[in-house]
Length: 247
Image (cartoon, one colour):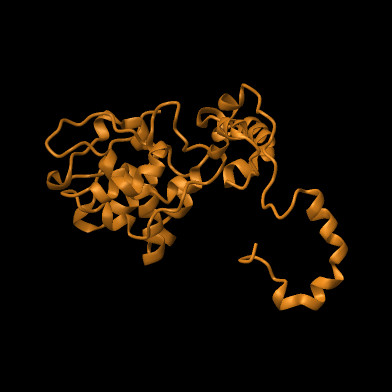
């Protein structure tokens, strides 16, 4: 491939490696990629589902099976016939192992305009599984990636004027106690980190009817897990007193 060849700039050095040409010839010429993997076991969609990937034993099993299919996921398999493409399609559940794409740097801004959330919806689309309360939730297996999409919680809040209801909230990040500690939120950087983790549960603490409805009464247990976020709302006149979470 002329675009990737370094021969012209390194003729003398490359000449010393002449015998290596035999390896390329044996592989069928100048091909880039790997041969497609064998068909995966029928249970691959189950062991690689978000529903159980949060369990270490299934995460490891899924990873072991999918190790043979890297070229399918990267699009670098050398396909000999149409059947090879069908095999790669069967490995699609393996993508659940990969981190979600990073959100755009403007995510918080896009999700702050309640009158126009279209940009927020588009930016959050890759991570909606983080906020699902059903078996397709990816929060347990994608906790680090999901935390980056905290601003998408704006899409989960009931529309202004609606009666409060059950709001899908992912479990909070395991480090929320440390991230939202008083010693950290005193700094601008620390406060922003805490705000990012607390974004999915903002409606739990809201007291301003002009920007949305407080959802605590219908989500006491889920809101209780976000207790450390209270520190963000305990500033002077904005102090909020929440009833204790039920155990």
